[in-house]
Length: 336
Ligand code: FPP
Ligand code: MG
Image 1 (cartoon, protein in one colour):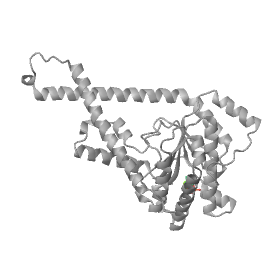
Image 2 (cartoon, protein in one colour; image 1 turned 120 degrees about the vertical axis):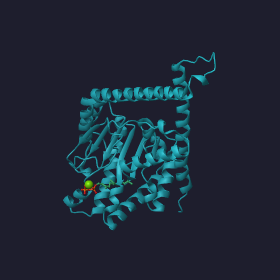
Image 3 (cartoon, helix red, strand yellow; image 1 turned 180 degrees about the vertical axis):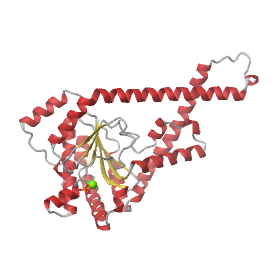
Image 4 (tube, protein in one colour; image 1 turned 90 degrees about the vertical axis):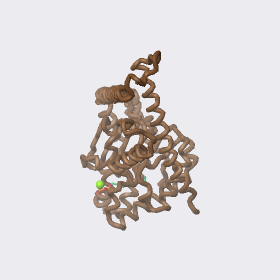
């Protein structure tokens, strides 16, 4: 199946419900743990591979429902690093689906352009077979300038792996003298994660009745509305999606307040840290180093320090992003 299946005729009830939902706050970023493909295969007496393919078809259909509602960013858990522990046959089967589907996406360039979709693949790509890495690089490089809709495919991903890689990058940055250890903050660590270019995750949905996050978006879901639905992923319907959005809308105000409070607290902590560091610096240099008449206030000193810190962290992040982009650019092109 295509990534852009022929749109089914919407019933009047369907249109009415979508219209009503759109009068309320619609989540901008929705994440899915697409769980239950193998149980679906057992239930339907079909091959496991067929179950995963049905899972892909459901993903394509769900992306269309999301576009229709005005959800502009979707993140899906397509392959966890933990999934490498599955049987060799199943891992090969999932890699084969990835090969086919990423190659197919490159054949659907017109649709990518029509919808302005930017596809990002988030994860430790070096764990994947080289040809899969190259196919991914093709799609990501091709679509990176689009910004109407964003699809993040988490592939060879776990949140703990992402966070520990981010920490390694920070440690290397400190060691190289690009940043100071005192520059490390929640905000800076967050900017080193694979999702650093994404909006906050508003709604996270897991199908199949399991009520765990299974190492998916652990950092990003701190202030998300979490919804666990009992249905297996290939059975997920537009009505399940609408139900989760309704739940999001009922909890929207509290979520916004919690998120705003967290942002305010982060800013306060940063200001406090800058202030403390400037006082420490002044204490070290001592009054004898002060030029007479040089009367910059403590407030100005803190401002100067914050500007220099921002400059350090911005150039550190710029070079981190450049290295990540170069990794993908070097992987192209795929041999026909
Ligand atoms: C979880 O169900 C599903 C997966 C591990 C694979 C999901 C992959 C797809 C839907 C295909 C997407 C492909 C691309 C390239 C985007 P499960 O296998 O854990 O099933 P179970 O919970 O019933 O055991
Ligand atoms: Mg599962």
